[in-house]
Length: 157
Image (cartoon, rainbow, N blue to C red; front, side):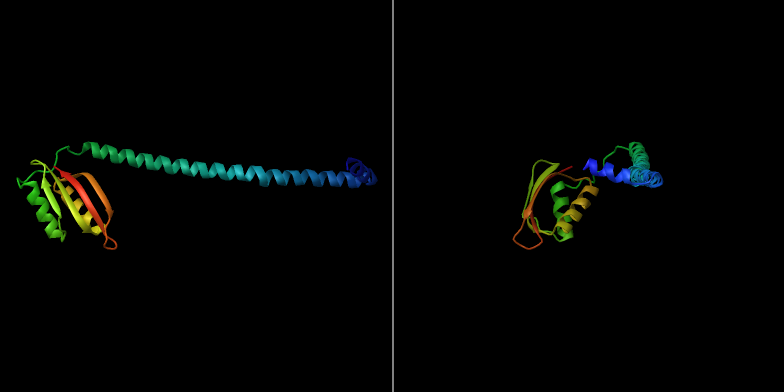
């Protein structure tokens, strides 16, 4: 194969050899430009944009952390209402039925619900958190009713 290439090259006039040499050099430049230079430039531009976005996100997070550190660390004030009464009353107001609500001391209780929609459950739990009652553990599994879950949770102040 190399011999046939050498023979074909030798059959060309010096002017044709020079023009083919220039053509192959230009072809190599185009391949280098399109295959290496442009992808590297595009990757550099994308990485620079990603770095700037990450720096902006980092600055925003640092500002939020600084703001959160300045907030007072006090817990919501307790109104003296027993926890079991507060949980039961707020569940009734939200239209939820507690299957079980066992107090485990003054500031902790175990609850269970047979069937509750997740949106209603998490809305109710968010309301409890606003009143100073947090969820320690939560176990949810699909309930027989479509779109509902059965829940067991431990709540604490």
